[in-house]
Length: 263
Ligand SMILES: Nc1ncnc2c1ncn2[C@@H]1O[C@H](COP(=O)(O)OP(=O)(O)OP(=O)(O)O)[C@@H](O)[C@H]1O
Ligand SMILES: [Mg+2]
Image (cartoon, rainbow, N blue to C red; front, side):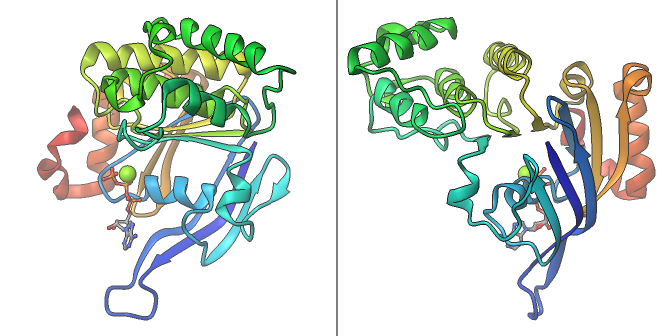
């Protein structure tokens, strides 16, 4: 679960460039819920994920993850319970290490570590996980990750982030750099991991069709705060056009300049 209360994040505090990226933001996500997070450029989506993961400090507010207050906890400690996949396929993996070594490293981190007694058993287990991705990576386990395609890397990064069942999975536009076919494959894998493991997930996307189609709940941010929160029949009854209208309402006339919202 995630419970964020009154979260404020300020960049360049005390300087001329001071900017509140999150303003008194509150959101509560029960265990096992999957939230799509949308909002225009600069709304604060990545900053929210960074604050939850501990990579940017909170100026005020509380961040409870998995039942414990974490706002004072350093990022490396939080990383034991927080899985992350970013937009850039090269960010989530170590490119000059093999596919298998990347996976072996990830398998030792997190709440459900894979701890087979013997290296050969771990190897078999990990090769099996690779095969389940359906991308042929089980045959490329000994190759360096730098040789994989963007889609293969993102699938691997997702497997690495999800397989030890983190208490919180943070996905920041993790399909945005992929071609439509690979974006669909990685979305399908996301669905399989989040639902199969009952993960609590926050997924940032600019793809409103995907935001509506996936997950249990849709949250819209604007200027560092939550401006809409739809779930159940309200989410099911929403359309891309309806979301565009909501964007227009919160943004006023600036809207016309922001074409990528409709991507
Ligand atoms: N490290 C930083 N230093 C200063 N300002 C920052 C920093 N990171 C983010 N910001 C500012 O905080 C605000 C929110 O940025 P953020 O990256 O969270 O937006 P976003 O919703 O993820 O946007 P996008 O859709 O473009 O990814 C923006 O005004 C941004 O310029
Ligand atoms: Mg962002």
